[in-house]
Length: 406
Image 1: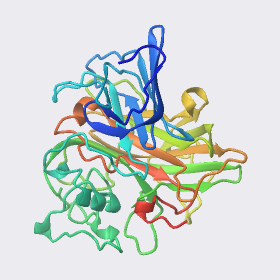
Image 2 (image 1 turned 180 degrees about the vertical axis):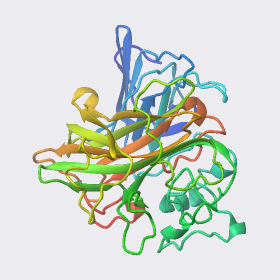
Image 3 (image 1 turned 120 degrees about the horizontal axis):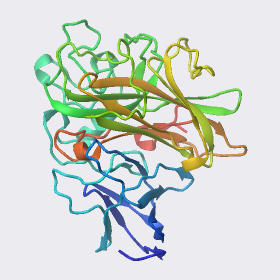
């Protein structure tokens, strides 16, 4: 790798942890500052990164990895252990054995249209197998499910033009043959894995059988603008570690268990980081956020201005975003054996920039979940990552491949 202050001209591809391929643009640069170095890469794609140490005592390295995309503020992370540059490919942390990733650096990569660019693993156990099969990935992404349907119970994918939410799971990490039945519900498959998902959510629509507390899942985040010129976006996060027991029903991980304090240091855990990103030409770094265990009451498309009111009994954590570190949301969900599944809603409120603009059908913000890298790199990890990033738009717009209507 080139030395201090050297620009990497015409670097076409970046590979992170031997797993993700990201096409780069110029400029991309590696700059050393005493004991600390910064690796900056420019891309037309979206790259979300975090540091996660699952308790192995790994100390993050001194090289900071900072993805850059035009107008966007994206999360950065440290722990670049090694860099190689050959044959037009830059590799971060190359050569680790497939069963060990000696780094805390984990990233999610999406192409310029929001689609998954590559999985962590080309193979895995049944529930996540073939996660990068293009036809299957499009179906799974379109219908917000990361499991393969069990034809023995008569399930088939909803019609391409009329998704039937009553036949699809309401929870990315728990499921049954009918999510609206009672305790007779059973898992589709007895897999033993880490599952992590970030999806959109809406208040239940007309005719929906879903619980009003947990809403209808959606391809994009629920967003709206407030009277104070703020832009609010809401995502649903579902996580699970280990096999799903019988009776572990969709929407069963919000209530009845006091959520762990975010960012609390826990022993013997698998952590999942929560990060956001936003169009810095449209939104500011300053803002507030909260975590909820159910949606606010009410009807209509407008998100209540009081959604993060600390007096709301369904708000269990509030925080402030500042210009430090570009105001990126930084939280985590810790999965422990006694509470191996958790679901929550993440709410972010940012001010809109005076005079700021955004293109039609272009996302304004995104929320990503990033599982621990040593788990994700193995077959028991979250190998299908098509639902780990969700985008928010000014209205009902979405990426062209999702059916954008300007």
